[in-house]
Length: 341
Image (cartoon, rainbow, N blue to C red; front, side, top):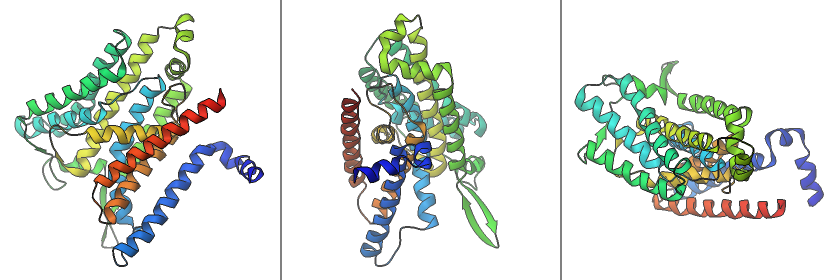
């Protein structure tokens, strides 16, 4: 068995993609097969593997993917950010409220989303890197602030972004583009294309630039980086700025798929974003990160959510499964680090 596993690891494709990432793709395939069988049994023949189910799962995967990409940068430095979900909602609430009540153009409202996220990321990064506050406490505080600011700004009212046929509804084509082919309407998941492009850019920043190498080195050995003469504060703060900005972009894709935003929400998405990171191979101890693994982990979360709903189960089942996945991924990360040490 061990020889067979070693032969599999030695395959060229496996070496290029990485064994862990290949395993994650296998997990996606297994999940799809399980949900296909269970959906057929529980829903009297209705199948899970349809194009409609795929696009529905991707709607969830878009914003989770952006949140997870941002969190990957923070975790790579050895920190943590529990505020990304509420920051996403805060950006969507404020921007949507300005569009509906103050007549802001749609393009201005869209630009506001990443700018608001950047403000939260800058504040959090400053407290962590320059004032040396624990990232755990700082992100929890920012999570509550984001909830409060969004709720106060909108007077605790839900905010509904325009539909695709409403004035300004063109923004929804960023997530899904409906075209007519042969007299039939076909949904093109444009959000998936944008997510992949952003993930490639994030991978380049994290793996091919000085900033990304410093972020990873901070998580591996912060003191060694500091003693080498590097201004660790600048690069650590940059990780939080990137995280907040991507949370703002996640807001655009959330409202592009789900339209209505509620105040004082978003907590659950923190855990899912972190679970996608850790599942994808990013170490909670820092110093090791995988952008490709994060994207695959996001898709696993999205497929799991869609599969649970397709079987008619309550969304609470997903929260439990996500917690178990996060716990298992952390245990695997700890055991892997022990073996390396």
